[in-house]
Length: 59
Length: 172
Image (cartoon, rainbow over all chains, first blue to last red; front, side, top):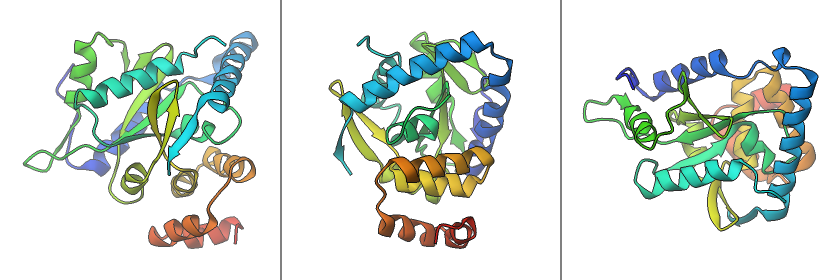
């Protein structure tokens, strides 16, 4: 990896990552309906898994 | 049920914690919200991490990416890393609200793994602070689908000067 992930402060680091996210995040509008349905189905299963298995132990 | 790919990411985070790469961290963003609500259309995972400044006060994130590269998690897109077709983002917790949200996160146990997740009250405050359209959608979802400690939320909003924005949003 390059050594460019050094920032003046936490605010600058945060903003840099936010900008990177905007650039690289999935462009949902470009997905086909089939791809979207596949993601939705996977997320439904993940959500169900969280509901069934995730227990809050410390608040 | 087949174990979801998300579990591999939780295991990765725990390994990073065990090896001292992550100290204070918590999941936020849409996946964080999903711990308290119905699912979201997302393939991003935001992991908020506290990064100790260097002696000269700089924030050096290279150690995270170097560690990931050494462990052969080498597929990067910008600052994101791809794990099991999820885009994982390590977000440096900036001072103030996010910092406190990470420190005061909830802890979940899932398949014998402890996972830190930002509490719904802090998720609301963070969404309000960001103030994008999708953030307000998150707020609505949390309010409708999870139990909120209203006193705690009010305290957070007042502490971080977000209460007027909350009033303007019509929640008071």
